Length: 446
Image (cartoon, rainbow, N blue to C red; front, top):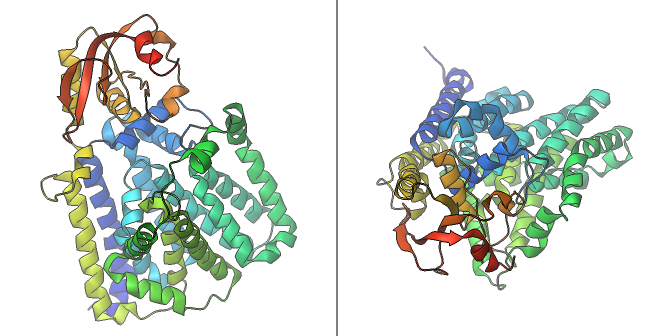
């Protein structure tokens, strides 16, 4: 007869890994690319050391499996990367808590969904896991091996998303004595050397990404709604229905080692910083995705009674069901009344209908979202012209091949008279036929 301990220690972790992998594959195979995924796929078609919106890791990961073709080719490295991250983190936690780790990777919505879609947050999660393991090795065994691993992990973290800086800063806050260790500075110099190609790219592009994220992003009027919404959302997104138990465990357990203090500091610093950011900037739910990972690992370092807490287990099972339902809702758009789900369905037909009705005409779009979807589903370059729209990566890519051409331009504004078309989400766009490229760009001041 299988004992309770055997079930939780050996059988349940395997079941949760299989559940995570299976549900992610269902979503990956059952949905079309989101706007941003198609945009980052274009990154992977034009590999570089940096891009307007983000560092390049998302493009590199897409490139690894894009030879498979279709949506699964874009997403597979992120799916396998999250599963691999779980196995990597198993090496630093208590064996008896592996089921909690895999439960968290399934029911933390930010983590779970970031592990299926080809987005910078997925890359951040993968290399956050590597960084946590590298930090543990470096703190336990000071030496060049640990310093090298930390350097590689740090560079990969920064190549994934700039949020990775908070892991490093939080560790310095928690363990300030590492500033006096020579191997810390060896790691820092090696990481800087590995990251220097991106810094050079930023310098050669007038620090476009830094200026966009830290200066040019739209501000909001200070108020209480966003901070309150931030606290409510982040309370739920870390654990769903078992969030109260996990947060209580996080604050109740005392951090004893340097590693534990670092993990606790990572979680708190990220949450506090982005809470402060909500006072002046529009809130993004994915801001704190890395905080969920450090919190989860910290909890899994300590003994707990979750294995024998029936209420926790019922709530955890319901959380699994909720996240699974949300994944099914993405695959079956009629299941959940959420407008955003329309971003994952109907775009291939939409793109091909536009092409079919405009044969012989060079297609262009105004916004990057539509240009990216058209490029992916038509299998050819469709540029974004960005008239009265924010600057993005298309402004860095060559448009000279369009000079002298007349375009079929898919735009959201009616600068020129044209045919009204609907997106799969029901948004009205204007398709302008036979408009010269130079005329369109004159409205942009070029």
